[in-house]
Image 1 (cartoon, rainbow, N blue to C red):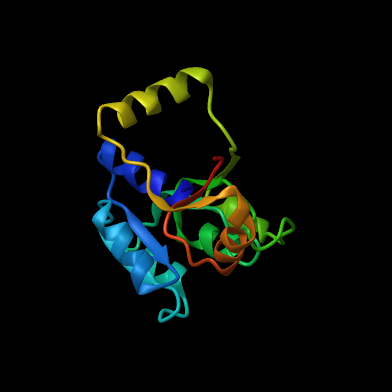
Image 2 (image 1 turned 120 degrees about the vertical axis):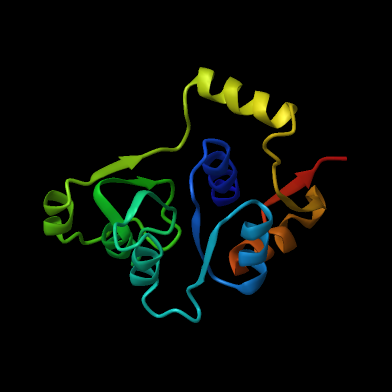
Length: 167
């Protein structure tokens, strides 16, 4: 959900969007949401180098990283001088080792975020209600099928949010 929203928000403000995806299906979804450059990390061993090259070797202004464990060093490399790394989760682990030379040598900012302000929420919801941002929903399950929903989520098979419906 964070990644599909990030693509749409970035496109809404006029950004060129590079997406690193774990499957062709997820990359196709990213493309349908407006992503400009698609990099399949299952085929591209060094995705940070590919992302860096896609920016004419300048680096990305903003890198959104929700994996962190194992990816943060690559995100630091993919960022431009003065760029920002936005951490919005830690699906592969909470602890990371950072080569601080990347941070101070490139004047990077590392920002953490779980939520915005109430005003940010209202602005985003206005974009949703007017159809300019579209929530990506994968599947809905009845509450009684929460276990299979969790299994789908744990397998990373979902494309967007999974919802549980209370009858």
